[in-house]
Image (tube, rainbow, N blue to C red; front, side, top):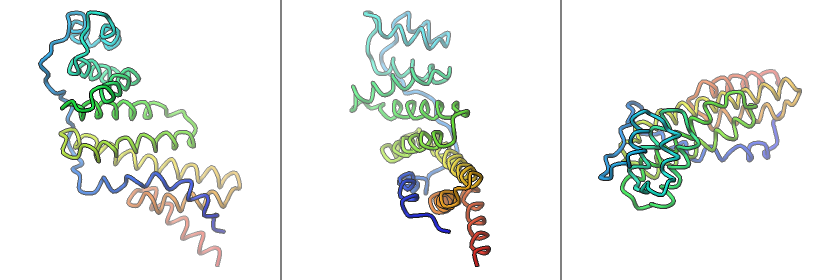
Amino acid sequence: MFAPNSHRRSLAPVSLATCVLIGLALTGCATTPPQGADSPPADVRHALDRGDCRVAYDALDTADAPSAVDVRLSVARVCLQRGEFTRTRNLADAILEDHPNHPDTDYAAYLGALAQLGTWNRATAMPPQQRSEQGRQVFLRLAAFLNDYPMSEYTESLAPRLARLRENLADIELQIADQAAAAGHQEEARARAEYVRDYYPGTSAARKAADRLQGDAGTDR
């Protein structure tokens, strides 16, 4: 039996950014921050030298710490390297909001996107349905970066991450289809399989979904 169209309409939005992968280089990793003219205050600089994200982050809020974008970007980079993803996103998002015309906004957007991806990668124990929903939000953020900053030097770093995320999301959707089938919800399982086949073409999960759907069609004859 084929699933009602409503199942697929609820899943379709993730496909909006798939086309940004076409033509992008899928190698390389640009992580060198831009060089600014402002040097960090002593307490921030010492924390950065030690790789201490939390101390550097807290020092930015002191009365003596300047709000220079390049200083905050340096702190955000160290926080990302230490896996402090919430602090990284806070800094990156604040820069994008407060300094939208700064020449290094692409680096702020890049760090924020990596932080959101890192948070998602860490949440492996999350239920598949919730993980899929949050993963689509991460996908859209990475794709938005590639759309907004196509000439950025950081594009070549995010493009392969977006491709891997797409593969992971397809696998999760197929896992949800398996769970639905095991629970006896055949229409939902078929809708999920069709979604994977149609919106994640080229992935291993899409090939598996197509094979299953073809097999189901053969048994229905």
